[in-house]
Length: 118
Image (tube, rainbow, N blue to C red; front, side, top):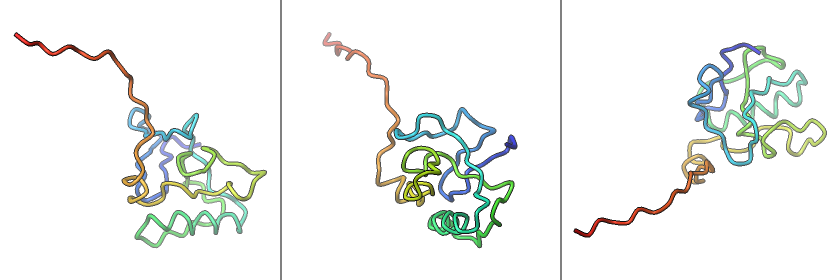
């Protein structure tokens, strides 16, 4: 996989070159960048889904070598080739999806500090 793999979903900024800036949703164990499918039917399904969050003329060929979708956009957090119902990007495809659903990144919980009452 090239070092410059970037997610094709319009509102997603995950880029393989900048792992410190990745946003990983709670349903994803390991963030990966999945290659665009070679199968024409699957590629068309992916294209229709990814177009929901883009405003350009996005139309990569099946098996396009420089087109990827990150794990955040798959229901199981990864591709599931044996299950055609979940083997395409269908989550967090538009900006409103990201804004309306809280980020699942867990915060570290610490002890509460007592307020000074001098």
